[in-house]
Length: 392
Image 1 (spheres, rainbow, N blue to C red):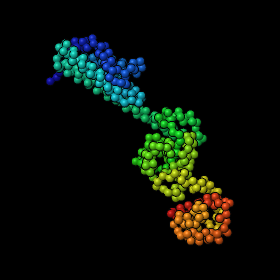
Image 2: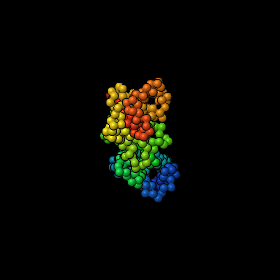
Image 3: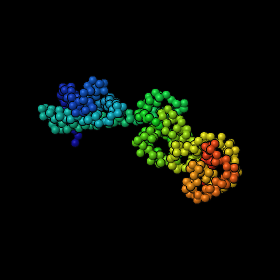
Image 4: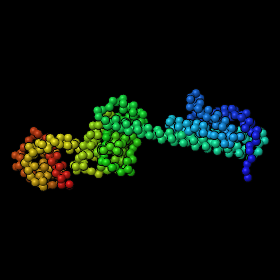
């Protein structure tokens, strides 16, 4: 059964009380929605009030013009949704304001229905029209909110990318530049950072990291910027790094020295790729200073190893490695053959035999105090290189 038109006099009756209805809605909104309470002087609050007035006016006009164009009204609500997103609030306050307005309107409809003798059909059609309009503008507000959130997220991500690159830049950026960009990117400024170098092609599922970590997955050598890696609250970081598999964690450095941390992390990753450090799990530069130092002086060590280690280098690899490893461990243990044997898991007499053999080959030069650090550095290089050749 089709519905007939609304009574011709109904729009004029509603218009007579339009301003009174708007005033009551605004009062109720301020009383019941804390976000708008007392904010009667701000531009945003005034826009909300104007939107309430425009909504009521449009609703009244739509009673006798059911096909009225609502685009201006929906644009207003899209703007309100955008402002809620930009302010960092949710849509709850705006939705509450719309609910309060509808309650006021329904109360007034019921009161007028009794006072003016409206039929139940007219009252039902009025309230149905009201809720349809509110659903429409609520959808517009949600669209505006979602669109603005997407834009904000994109802007924030771009700023985080610029911040990430700035923190890894060389020469070091000014602290003020870092601070300003960190505020814009909503990134809490840490006291220190550590950079992590990764092999290319980290699995997507393992890329879920704590929100403070800045990542560049598309760099030729992907890297992460980790805030305060030695500080509290990093219980989520290390499991996430372990999921990535192979990774090299640079030294912890002050802000502005990220390039130093990244450079050493990449050196450590090079050692992993050469088989000189373990792969499949994160390694920390601070735990592998000797091999990193030898890598930094790789050319020098390679050029001088023959002069310093010559007699050992002349031996076949199968004989060279046990002797070099024994001498290195003996020197690391303070010339204590017993401790060296325990560390190498061999008999003490085996250690002493090998040391005698080294003395025969070198004339005892490796036991002299002078140059001992140089010898240990070169032996470390020799042992790691030989081990890598064995597993290659």
